[in-house]
Structures are given as C-alpha cells and as structure tokens.
Amino acid sequence: MKNKIRLYCFPIVIMLLFLVNTLAQADIYKYIDKHGHLMLTDNPTHEGYKRLVKTWKGWEEAKELPENFNLLKNKKNLIQLFAV
Image (tube, rainbow, N blue to C red; front, side, top):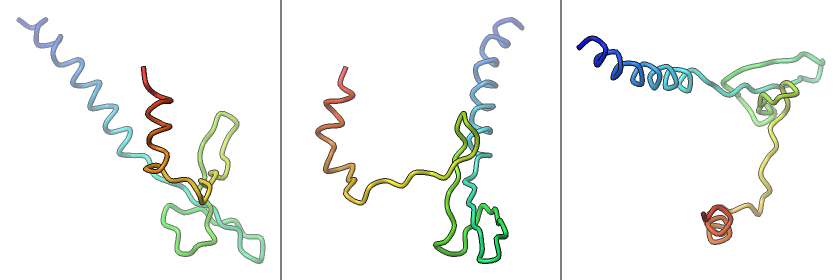
C-alpha cells in the first residue's frame, strides 16, 4: 500500500517543483545612464531599459522581433513548418 502511495506522489512532487521553478523566473532589464552607471531591475520605468536573456554564453540583450513580424499573418506558414 505504501509503495502505491509513493508511486503516485512522486510524479506530483516533480510537477510541483517544475511549477515553482517557472513561477520564480522574472525578466531582468539593463540601463546605462549618461554617467555610465549600470542599473539592473525587474521593473523598468522608461523605454531606455533593455531586456536581458541568459544564454549558454552568458547574459545578452534580447533580440527584438522585426516590426513586420505578425504571428497570425504567418500562421499558415508556421502550421506547415511544425506539421508532423
């Protein structure tokens, strides 16, 4: 009986750990003022902040999507791309 309880509880505990991990993540923004001071925050107050992402090389500025990028417009191409 105890083995069955452990068998069912283990996947639930693992799923909860992944859920807690994703809830704890936050975006980090960087701003360098006119005096050269580096400011890092998770709550940017103006447009001068750049979002940072962690890559295998370290922290880098996030690449912005092109202005003509429209997910709904490109939906047909994306469906064909990911079709199995």
